[in-house]
Image 1 (tube, rainbow, N blue to C red):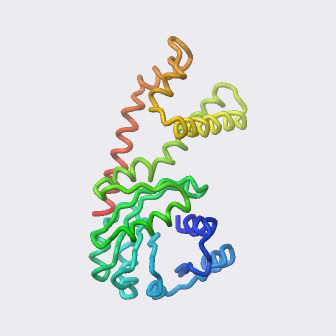
Image 2: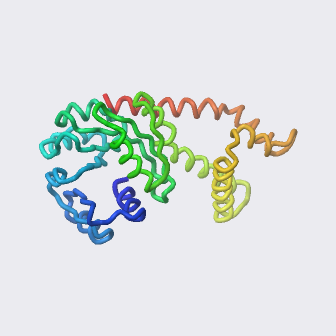
Length: 254
């Protein structure tokens, strides 16, 4: 996700000279420097020179990273965290008083500039801090501001959401093969159906139920398929799955 955001910022017109990447693995550092032309350093003290610091680390590594980076931070700086489950209060308790913290839940379609990110402000954030975080994330997709108490639900829907979509498309492809289609044809049919349906949802702004009903003729093939999905409680399974993702997000932050 860090590289995704880095590449998006550069595509959006940010100068590589205005960016600094901290990466301790020499091989990875060399790779990033060559690919994007940005300065890559190993010393987290480089954060002292930045107006905005992005933390793109695993939740379980956050406490150690904060302990290392805190001495380099100062009041007024903006600290943007992309770690799932980690609260702004947790981060604020590990950094100097006055550091502005924004919590972000992004998702992987940011790789193709179609990401969905939700942001929440910490105690010391002002409008300028939120605007800066929003501007950064808009380089790879869309941004919505939510109360922090909703971030675990956001994680369940959009943070983990791409995996659910890929799971459904994978199942459709396998079903197509089972029904006698060549795998390449089943793949193209399923993927383009997903892309077209997503564009319809966005551009028509219709409720999904309305669009579903437009495809579903009484007694037809779609009705027969949807009846099977209801029999197998697919809707209830999605609810249970998202609740499990929300609960795991809460666990990561505790």
